[in-house]
Picture 1 (cartoon, rainbow, N blue to C red):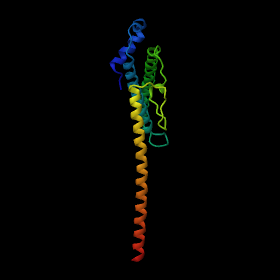
Picture 2: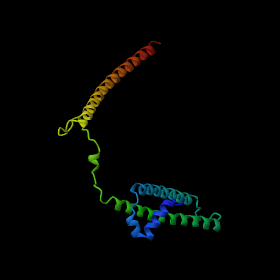
Picture 3: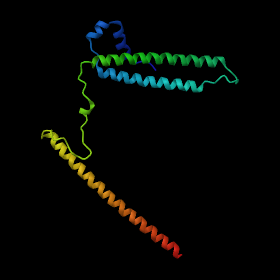
Picture 4: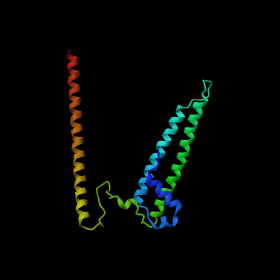
Length: 177
């Protein structure tokens, strides 16, 4: 698994010319994509390491092939070396993303998620407008869901009664025969 040319170019520029890299901002979204690819590479390398470890024979008195063992050991060491390189690369991406996002306002996630209480009541402090129409629609949906639950309970009761009636009929028929 090789690193994409864009990644190599970005990190080479950061390491060789820090003053020019500071002048030219790297897009945070592309850094996140690079970070995601790096994490995928780390997972792939880790899976390959476990595959190599699973296929290695333990020296338990069985025929021992030193060449095969040395070859697998070399592959394992290469994978571990690449894994450490990938973790360093991920740390660079993480630091750069944190640096780019340092000036941003941290909005708490609670403010980003629309909140509906269980009983369907809303906060009365909200102004009437597009948000009010949406809250009316949500309220209607909650009422319809309540009615649907009640109908489902009634249907379940009817089905249980029918099941009991059929069971009683079958048991009477079995007694008569």
